[in-house]
Length: 273
Image 1: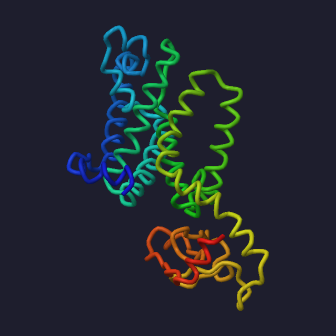
Image 2: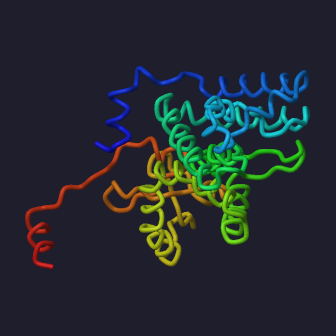
Image 3: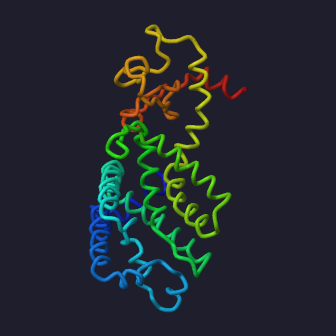
């Protein structure tokens, strides 16, 4: 049993339900407060030096600050965040989603103290929700500016490229914020990332090998869909199944692992190698 499963069993009853919606409501309230009394919002940003001076509420209120104070952009930002966050809540459950954001939150606060007099932001933490969504649903299509269709995996590549460039050229606060925001992503997905890299050569070998009878290179073991019947489908190979079986994005996380026990002769020959 992994560390996430152990935590899940012990503290599942403490999970905050509908956390995405609660954050959106808080950010909407802060936007309304900014319209009426903007000077109050200035005292809610995460500034470590002010926290050390006794303004402890900044540790909480910075999470409720909206990513923008433009009404039009705020509507699209919050709608997009609700779409992504609610999808992760359904996929992981409330506790794991809570844990994902909690790790990012703690890392962001800790990173902010590297440069105590700078202003930290929750924007990169919210971006980690998008990166997690893009990893789970890489072929999901969104419409940029309500017109241009684009799959989320391409947006994720742009974000990762920006992160790499900023880690080289950015200031220390931005670097710290980026590293903090991807910590939760790496902790949650590093087993899949390692397996993805480790078994990537098998996908390359499959492409180099003779194609299937219908001319396809990849086939889902569960539903039978191939890269010819759906050229845009993302196929992955399960390391826990015997024989490097391939699955489509709908079944890679929801299938019964197929294992073939080795015969005594195969086990003996394997021990001699």
